[in-house]
Amino acid sequence: MQRGLTGSYTTTSVAGETVRAFVPHPLPPTPPLEITPQRQQRLERALLACGRLDAITALLPDPHLFLYAYVRREAVLSSQIEGTQSSLSDLLLFELDEQPGVPFDDVVEVSNYVAALEHGLKRLREGFPLCNRLLREIHAQLLARGRGADKQPGEFRRSQNWIGGTRPGNAQYVPPPPQEVEDCMAALERFLHAPDTPGALIKAALAHVQFETIHPFLDGNGRVGRLLIALILHHDGVLRQPLLYLSLYFKQHRAEYYRLLDAVRLTGDWEAWLDFMLEGIEQTATGAVQTAHRLLALFDADAHRIATLGRAAPNALRVFESLRRRPLARIDALSEQLGIAFPTAARAIEGLQRLGIVSEITGRRRERIYAYRAYLDILNEGTRP
View 1 (cartoon, helix red, strand yellow):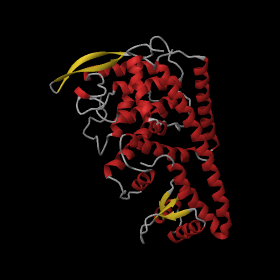
View 2 (cartoon, rainbow, N blue to C red):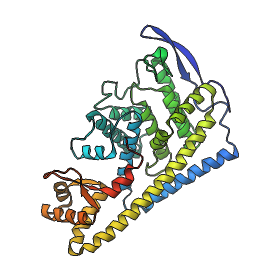
View 3 (cartoon, rainbow, N blue to C red):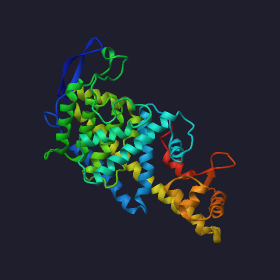
View 4 (cartoon, helix red, strand yellow):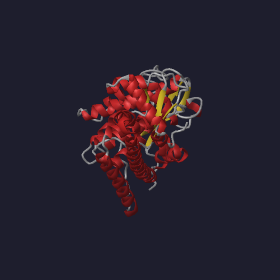
């Protein structure tokens, strides 16, 4: 449906030049979204895929194990969209206090994303509402250190920003002037909690576009906007564990993603955006279920192989359980974590190496790091910079 412009232009002066900034109308769209039978089927398929993903978490021996890995995978992908070059292995090495083989700021940025997401989830579990204050808290975590630390972490912007171009005058898109941001975000917050708001998937789709259109922060808007989707689905009870992240889908369809955002603003084609989003949710949820099944099969097969180690099997299994939680580890850390002697942990690692389950990745003689390769390979799919 073509509604025309979904906001209004206002003139503002930036660095001596006058530009037209876009101020979106409050949600929901007017006239309401057109939910055709075909679109309803698409919505139901996406919800069904989310239901399967929610169900698989109940089958996992430790849902937090899967969540730990998936949160980090999402952090890498979402940050890559913004131009970082970190890989998942870089992040895991950084978390071991190792010097990563990429620019330091890149891996700090990804680590900040993990902290921001975990902070948001913790607050929601404590009963804190999904609101602008929470989004500002998440933003403060996201820009706590490294690049962007001087871009007003945790505060809505007080100056004009723009997207594309070297200055506002030749920008591809100019968001609302700073004096409009507070009102725009207050309207978005009201929409998130309105009693007649559409279901969670539609709400997440609409809210993501609105957030990106407002662009309320000086930096980090893309990452917070992608986090907002996961937070809405968790907050509204679609997923008990927040395991649905669309960054890989957006990365794979980047040109279409930006084209559809512009189409919403300029022509009001919310339906085309919703179709794109529902397709992404269905694909991503289905992919996450398949990944969970592959990991469960891998863990089961490797545990059976470890059982063939005879008397060495019990300690090897304990080390293996630790590597399932964190697929990179040092022997001294395993020894301390599991409460076993260093030589015992070393022998367990040797057994896992003989079976081809772990491999050493540093080539050093001391402070060597061992990786659960097959597990990392599954998680790394699609995350290469």
